Structures are given as structure tokens and as C-alpha cells.
Length: 387
Image (tube, rainbow, N blue to C red; front, side, top):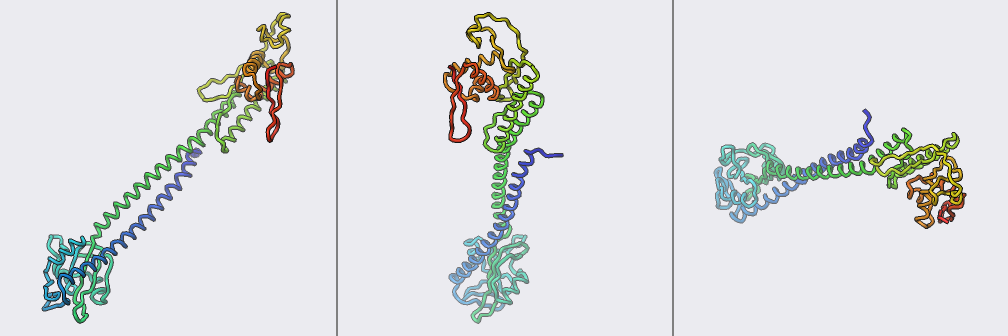
């Protein structure tokens, strides 16, 4: 099934827009995810330094293991929940102090709500921190839940690693914050995409499709023999040029129809071709045969017949109509100024080509005088004025 031009244009505009929106959203999601991880790791590192500073201020002295119990200075740290609770309150993190790889005091809780005392750290963390003496920064499984974590070795007075200090940020909480931000960005992207799509649809309909439909409709009517189907499109783009070419074609066909009528010997007394302003206006095409009328000798002093009201005592050229001739002359006299054939045609609802034929006849019989108007470029324009 062939798609309409409107569908093709909308697809051409909206398709790339949607594709760019999807690509932009994917890139934004990836970027924000990386930034969120970086921000979380930075916070964990800073909170770990804060926890270490608080422990040093609250409990001066070296870390020490005595009979399986962890001390700092003279203060017992094993099962000392006050210090980890205080650090957790200040940082918003979970906090744990390990003796070896075993939690000796912590804010981390198991599913039953009890503190996870005596549970062990994962082997990956244990290897990097306890064995290699390095800082661990990243995602880790903490008692069945995923956290963004930071672990640091705890050393005694001799530099021996005897435990670890830990802070962790819930990955579930950080993911929720990330998802909210992403939903906001996606929502804004969708709204902007729809808005641009509506603007594209309106522009396509008004500037391209509407004028083309108007030209198509007039062309179909022209094919049925209605030679008054000129279109009024003010656009200065290619569609405006197409409309102008169509109107020139209509004028040419009207002139050709007049010529054929003259050659065939047909009297075409009234031919009115008004410019169609909208589809609601009637199409006026009048064709009447000539009427043979006897007129008095008094009419000879009025070669146009405007004063006596009688038909013309002279023979009109084939294709010209007495009533239209009088209408044109009356319009010229009422305006009392030089006018072009186009202006006169618009004034009496005729095409420029038809109006010029009447004006040439009026010039021949001496009812109008002609002036030449010269412009900067192009041919001079004839201006007609009543004598």
C-alpha cells in the first residue's frame, strides 16, 4: 500500500527525531549510571575517612587484639555498638568493625533484625584487604544484600593487619534515586518529542500538504472543463511557484478556448472566469449565443451603448461580450486613474488575459488612452485610463 506524501514527510521528520531521542536517552542513562557509581564510591571513601577520624578522636591509642577481643587504646571495641551507631548516624551508612574477617561490632542487621555479629566478610574483600592490605572500593554482598562499600585494613602498633573498618551505602537505595532521575529525564524527553512531532505535523499540513491538496482539487476540476480554477497560495517557496505555474496554465487554456471559439465561428458573448477564493464559492462559467437586435439610428452616436442602453451598433470581435465591455468601461471611468490589465481584470472579476482583449478593443475604438510605465527591469507595463 502506497503511503501518502503527508505520511512520508512525517515519517521523515519524526522517525529520526524518535531515533535521536532513544539514542540520547540511552547515552544519558549510561552516563548518569557511571556518575552515580562514581558519586557513591566517592561518598563511601569520604565516609570511611570520617569514621576513622571519629574513632581516633573518641578512642585514642593503637588497635590491639587481646585474647580474641578487639581494643583501641584501653577501650573495648568488640560489641561496642555506641561507636558504630554514632558513625552511622552522622554518615547515613552501615558501619562495621572487623576482627580479622569476623564482624565484632556492626550496624548491619540480619533478616531477623539482629545485628550480624560473628558473620564473615566475603572472600574477595578478605583477600584484597586482609591479605594484600589494600583499600577495597566497590560493590559487595553484605549479609545477603548488595552495597556500594569501602573497606580499609586495621593495623596494630607493629603494622600487622588485625581487622577491617567498613562503611556501606545500600545499592537498593542508590538505585531508587538513580531510577527517579532517569524517569524524570525520560519523561521530559518524551514530552519534547511529542511537542516537536506536533509542530512538524502542523507545519507539514499547513505549508505543504494543504496547498498541494488545493492544487490537486483545482486540477481535477479543471479536467472536467471548468476553466476558472485558479488558486490563491501566498507561499514564496517551490509550492508557491507551482501554484503560479498552475494559474498561468489556466490563463493559457482560457485564451486558447477563446481562440478556438473564434476559429470555429462561435459567438461567445459572455465568459466570466472569476478567481476562486475558496471551495465554497460557485464556479461561474457563462456562455451565451449572440442575439441579433435591431437598434435605432440614435444609437450610432453612442458606439458603446452606455447612454442609450441599446446593444452595440458595431460588430464586436468574436469572443467579446457587450455587457462585459460596458462593465469594464464603467469600472475604468469610476476609478479615473491609470490601471494595468491585471488591476482592471481583478476589479471586474476577469482574468488578466481576458481583460486585456477588451482593453485592446477599447483602445482601437478610442474609448481609452494608454500610458507606458517603465520599471527598472523587464518590459514596460501598459496603463489604461478613460478619455
